[in-house]
Image (cartoon, rainbow, N blue to C red; front, side):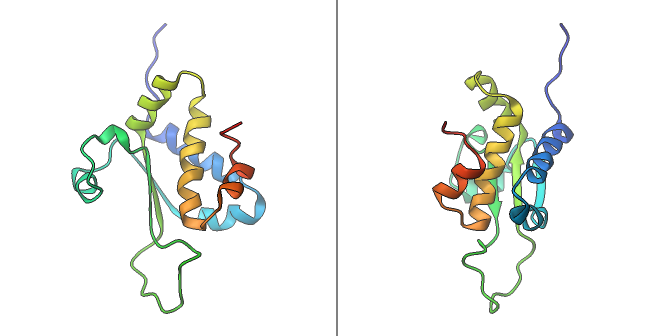
Length: 131
């Protein structure tokens, strides 16, 4: 059987489908977050996070959580979520017990939780990962 690893576009499609599957009141604001899918975090990003292993980071939220934003804040750019394909694929292979869609959705929901300031209960209601 000849197979290739899911590419960047496939991971992005899975993530965008996960956004569209959110409850209606979260869907529109989630669409406003810039979604970037890359193979790996950049060396500069890893340095800034004091991480050595690029496989340790599957996703990252960059921005100010909505629960902390103020009208006095100067815009620093759009809120962004970065998903890192190769670390996600590595974790998917290591786990062997979840689908790629489940894992990408879980990583995305975790990063959206940072943006929205969700509690653990909010996350569990949207992503029943722990069940």
